[in-house]
Length: 120
Length: 120
Image 1 (cartoon, each protein chain N blue to C red):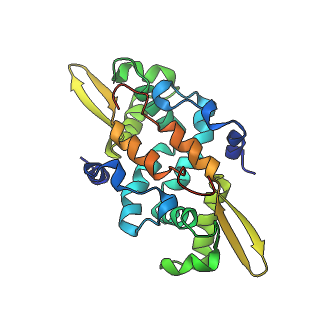
Image 2: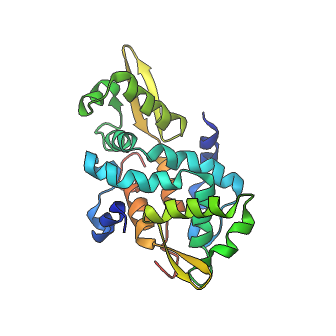
């Protein structure tokens, strides 16, 4: 478990949206790596493929064909997503299977919720 | 207006959450810079300070005191947030004033919405 995923032990409701208050330095250091992991087009596509997979998980063997990238490069991007706490994985036999960590996305979406702001 | 903010001309509802379908390469290239801009602790704190400001905007002169960073470094981070379409700014007299672009946060939060997924 990466340090950032420690935050997931709090319920999403425990984190107020950014429109309701400033993040302190520790909170910002915890959340920034999760956003940074999403800040790459390949990783964003990989996350969306994993998140929208029927059956809730995807074999890495079904992810690589959508990109003009080597297997090791795809594996590196998947490792970044996993270390940020956005996806989880299991090795079964030859292949590694990836699945979304929904609580992580709930957390980030909650931070970006502007519905309570007058400007929204 | 940066290229990424072109996406805001579509209503948030036009973008399905990632749990409902994979992003294509063009969509991922448009959204990744917005997440990347949030992927730094200083920028995440700056965004939260701007987003939660009473009155809807913040003078850059009120942002710098919270960081052990030089003015030019803070200005660089604010420029990254602005170029990603997350904040907007106006120069009035000596100072630059920053305000949130709520539609950008609505867009990103919508992408991360897992409420429609079975796993959520």
